[in-house]
Image (cartoon, rainbow, N blue to C red; front, side, top):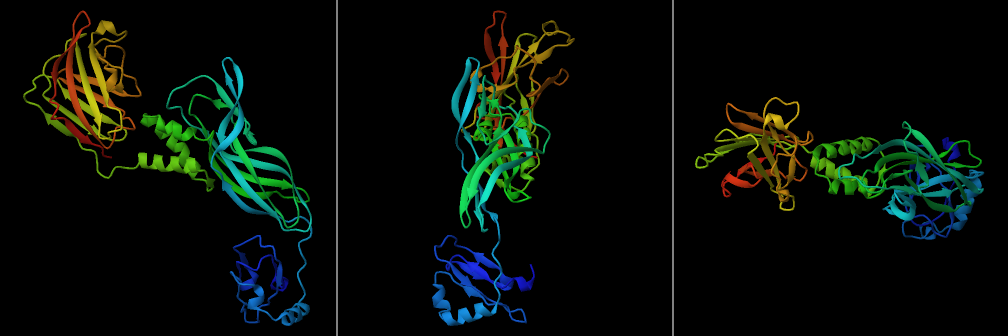
Length: 450
């Protein structure tokens, strides 16, 4: 548009308008019922008339009607936009609401409802003819599924999303189109929502998709689509936070944190849940200010457990327990208690039993069997299996009598841990007795570092 084209402006409200240089009109309050026509022109030195009509009638600012008509007659008016003039007024991501769904259980499908996060869209027709919206086009730029961190169960849910994404997902990006039949009359605006989600997800597992999508509208009499913007959300809604609440596995959380971080690299209007997930994961994996240092504690009066040392980072907890004598295969049990500084967290333990070579297939030397990290209420006494690789490893140096646990910390371990240990013995009848314990009032305290 040239300067010659900027000759007249129609203001549909006399409240909340600011007229700036070069004909820029900022409308802060839309929808006023009165319509005024205001015309201005710039001087040869580029000076514009500044019109402020905030909370004041336009007649009070320029009451000379004859003068207005004289100027209007002298300056040719720009023609109104001919045809539909569809424009975006607002795009936002709503809070979750219910949509219909079909849940498929082993005994058959059932009707249900699930939570979905919708994009709320408002458009306005600034043209002279009716605008007919024929389709919503959703371009899926990013769609990744969370790793299951909290267990599994039967069943799948298929939500009735407006943009239903196929499973398995095609390579991204890919388009999904939803037909529409929405008419917007001249001078009017219309609001509607678009929900986006996967065709089916497990019902009893918190494994939602993190989705980033561009939305546009196809409408008649226009060769190009109306671009609305980009939204980012969790589908089904609520499952992302549920995954985080029930998870204590650092590695699993790190995988899901990366999915959220990658989605955040794309500018978008984001759902509240996605914002909260990003904040929580950022705090969870923030670098500790101090470097990790080995902490040790000795108990000279406890000859069976004279010393214990530990080093603690977000990725690894190393605990070394010095034994006062040779362990006895199939009898000796060492238990390390891991008490978190967080009073709301579980208290954990790891138990290791010394197993003779004949008890474990394809192993030539005695080793330490363990169920891995468990809550302290389990009261496990070892001897069942090898340490789960996700929890870590156990090694023993027969020369120094040092038993070393390399453990993957739980998410709720807290910033510091209080460590204590027991040595127990199991007799031939399976009865377990305590041989020695570190003093309850003298625990080893280790702080997490980087």
